Length: 88
Image 1: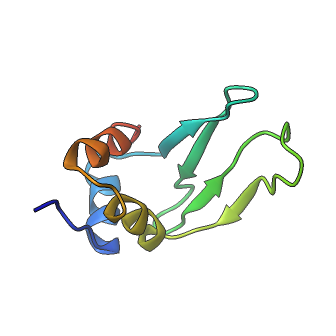
Image 2 (image 1 turned 120 degrees about the vertical axis):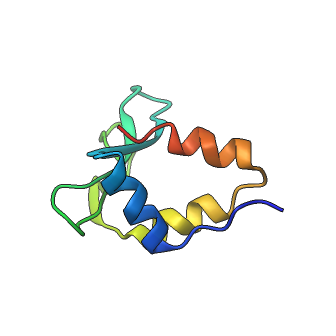
Image 3 (image 1 turned 60 degrees about the vertical axis):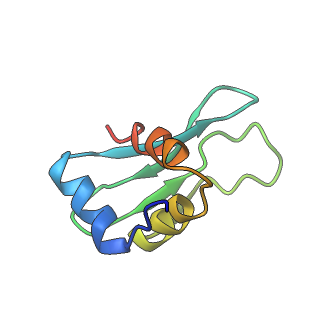
């Protein structure tokens, strides 16, 4: 059975690793690193990055819960670990 994450667990991972960012993927148009960043304790921003795609909204408020939901949608622990490798 694959792990299920809570928002609290994700927040703890960010604190323990002293992460400032969690990269999700790179833009297929310009290679910009899209993902979340953590500007202050408890604050989560999703940065969709570039403006090379029409309708791109750039940054928006997010949450540790949203990150947990993304992790919990994955079909394997390998996929979850690949996402968590983006914590820097």
